[in-house]
Amino acid sequence: MCQDVVIFHIDVNSAYLSWSALKKLESGAKVDLRDIPSIIGGDMEARHGVVLAKSIPAKAFHVTTGEPIVHAFRKCPHLVMEAPDHALYHRRSKELMGFLSNICPDIEQVSVDECYMDYTPVAGRYGNPVAAATHMKDSILEKFGYTVNIGISDRKVLAKMASDFKKPNLVHTLFHNEIREKMWGLPVSSLYMCGRSSVETLRKLEILTIGDLAQANRDILASHLKSHGITLWEYANGIDASHVVTAPVDAKGIGNSITLKEDACTKEEAYRTLLSLAESVAGRLRESGLLAGMVSTEIKYSNFRSVSHQATLATPTCTTNAVYEMACRLFDELWNGAPIRLLGIRTSKLASREEPMQLSLFDLNVAQKIQPPSEKQQKLDCALDSIRKKYGAGSIVRGSLLSPKKENGE
Image (cartoon, rainbow, N blue to C red; front, side, top):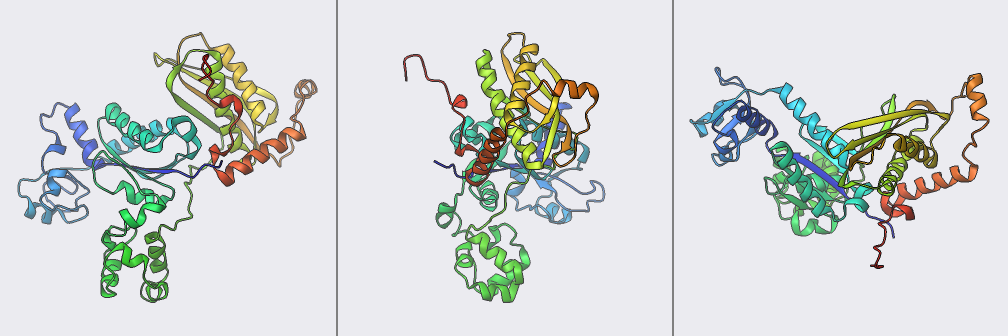
């Protein structure tokens, strides 16, 4: 049975303010900016510029993001303001994205404080998406000290909408079959990409809610808002064919790693994880039209000590079996028997599959002893790639990756 696409949209709650508040607390501040009417933005002395972020108590005074600071102080004279620290925000953002990438590498970062995650490839590993997202947001709070909202859907635009529902520190779903109940009753101003001028134009057309927009005449919308009107109509109806676009391939290497839900204590457990990682890495090599000449295996133990080892392949490859076998060989050389928290595979010395390979005399001697991947194996890999691309990463799973049965047969 094929697996439906599941997309997360992860959004830090008042990122600039949360990150600045944490820095001040670490420096000995007695008051948390998040607990008082406060904002980030502008020039503290001249009081010019706009509000970049606001606290929940500031929101109670109707302070809004993007409004002039002078207006915010008129609404709340005792407002506390902090200047932005973009170097800090960059570090915090990189820290968060690194954490999320260890859960699933298929991430599209769209701003310093938000990203999309294609949860589909790891759904079989982590299970129910709501439970997984809840655990994820709780882990972020425990590890980093700030909250996020996570929206879950089968469409990117709906995942974005879901994450904007009630805040903070919450998980919401908005699947396509839920839009009539959860989204159509909202004002059109709540719709993603529907700005003030569009809202005013729609108001003149007596289109006040997202449901009104969803049921409006497309031709009329196009005549008033051009192509943007059609886009808004599609979003109101949950139509969005875009995919999560991961970061461009690093020309120096393609890899993947995962922090395990429970420490691996046996070689068999580690091998199952390495096989899953090898499938992901080799699949990305094939998708990019690349061959790998080197494989590296990384182990992080439960005490957070990391070790890695790499080896050159006799014949550059993009097959799952070749990457997996080398990763296991390197694992055997590295592992000291201690519990494992993280495993990773990385390939490097990449070359296009179309480029002729120049081998030294030594390479030729070694390559003659290595059986290249059979045509049957290559066709099998391509067939599996095609099935996963069409039906989702979890649509077909190797038997060896399924959870082993308990001894009592349950």
